[in-house]
Length: 505
Image (cartoon, rainbow, N blue to C red):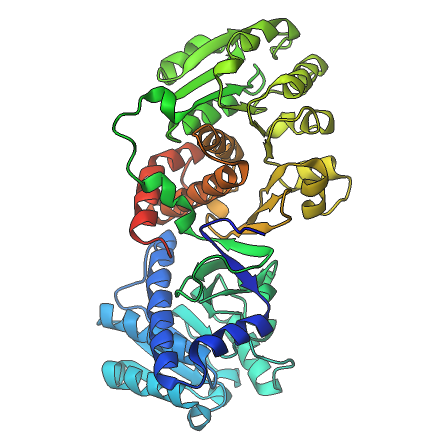
């Protein structure tokens, strides 16, 4: 298979060990350099993600859980970097197996931390931590570095008790290095350093996963399970041809909306306008067109005859037929509703158009998805996919249907029906768990698909990553609660620029 540029393989624990053996062997100098990169990357990511809940406090308290090896070393290097930026902060370290059990590089990380932070770092024994006497300590940050990906279950009784005890303590931000220790530590974020290990996929104890690319991969490595990186957006940050005009950047058309759900198609159009497409045309119920044109005059709004209930009527087909040859992509479904007449219209359009399609929301019906021969991207959430697939696995469904499947969820996955690969996006988060998020994504993917030469898989991946990066930026700026989803659009420019400046973030 030819992997999408801007993605890296997701590895089993054995594969990850083989990669690190190939890269470092027994060379402690190389291992130490990699540990430094990992620790500093964790510190930067923690600080960035802490912004979602107000930022790391100036006098914050850090709890470090360290095992014998590299994960503990990574956690201590990360803590050292945070303490250096926060001179009033302090840390406490619990060595799960005692200081004397530390391997050489972990010992070096501990000595550096102790030397640089001095009195701001204290030790607590496992026995003290699990005694259960006195008030529970409060912490701003807990860094879990007890076990790495070479851990073999079960954890000893004392260590298991420690992890369960720490889970019960009041901690604002719980971060695991690489994998939550023993599957017991309950993380808010897990920072996968160097590679994403397969046990993280679907692990509820991992919280939100961040992939910290340390340069282990050079591109082209095999792997049907893959993680998307911000580098997938690189083509969007390149110079545009100075001789180009609006037609050179594609014409995306959108068909949807109803009096029952007017906002969905408007949000999809607003996102398409931000995608970089040169032209945007929207076909909407005629009663909605004047108001939408006032809200977004950059788009060309075409009023469509309505059914008595306010949906798209079959008699409007000529409006699309007159213009569809100029389309380089068509988005269909947002806000369309499920009137039989409207669904019959959508099935007819899907069967006839040659332009690549993005099908979303109410257009996600079996008879519509399987109609026609045009390239198709479909964007269901879990409930919609269950209705479409009749229990089929996503990869098999994508292959049999010949679609690019964007399966939305806490971790959005993209299944390439042509090659059978699954691409995981760890960008975004709970801020996206609100109405309208999928409409924005559909419009963004459609606008990207319209820009030649963009294949369906690339458009889907870029849309998902860009959407997720903007959501992360929105949450860090305003939190995940007091926001509206359309605010995400204002963070698309910054997300794209950040991805260009720091593609491995």
